[in-house]
Image (tube, rainbow, N blue to C red):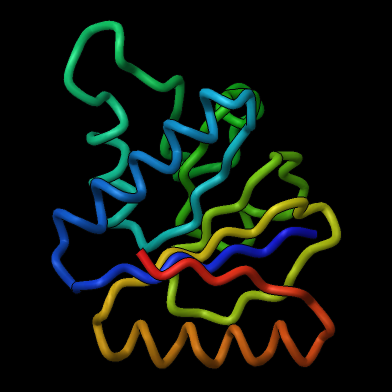
Length: 143
């Protein structure tokens, strides 16, 4: 499994949203399928932002508040409940939560995006150490 941590230089919300949206767009352009795991409010914000700026600049996606086989088929899915992640067969899991979620065997590529908000940094450091202790190799990108 590939694991990438992206560390942003500030805690500005706009920079965070822009970076996440750009990453999702680049993964999609590369033919990857993505599930984004985040808090409810963040999922709603990203759901709106994945429309980008034009009619032709839309990523087929949905915020799944309930399990839906139709939504699960989309290339980009947002979820706010950990239970919704089980059984997802996507190429990339973008985890935007503060939790140390267990790594599922079906996850091929885990991406963690962290800004400079102190509690988020502490949580990501704990998660990094836990993954490292499990023997995973982690790529860290300071943006």
